[in-house]
Length: 189
Image 1 (cartoon, helix red, strand yellow):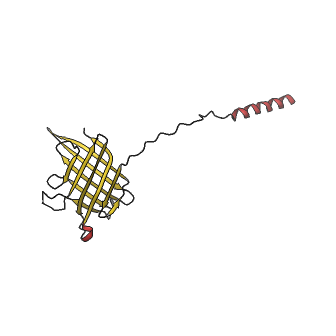
Image 2 (cartoon, rainbow, N blue to C red):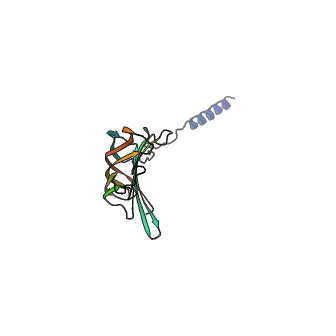
Image 3 (tube, rainbow, N blue to C red):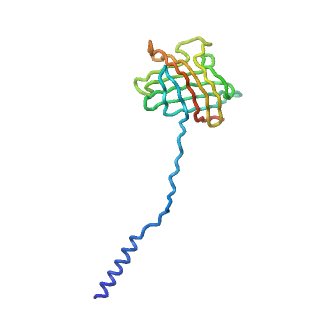
């Protein structure tokens, strides 16, 4: 009987020690790879106040129309905390290169500034001025200093006008001293 008890105790210890065996682990675990988000570098002043974005980007698009192409250069910068956003579109029949571009009614350039973006009390300012028929008035200037397949750098200034009927001091938003070095996405190339 004693042998049976010793044998049972022996088997119990063998299984107990065997089940407590540590799992072999790598002494230097491999970290989970992360991809940094490139929100770009952007600064601007909006009617005298600093604009601090959460993210900024450029999308450069090529669209084909029969035998000709239309190129667009779209810049967007937004602050998701304050729900403010600015953007502009430039259009051309040639691919965008470093140079100076204007926002006018005649070249279909457009610029916008939003407060309370996508909320029920959204306010919008735009250029060209709503209901304007002046084809030659320059609402703003964009200078592209560098453009690659992945980045765009430059500066701009423009004046936008209330689209939602605001008057007085709220009738315009003037964007000045805007500089950008942001990621660029190409589409249609």
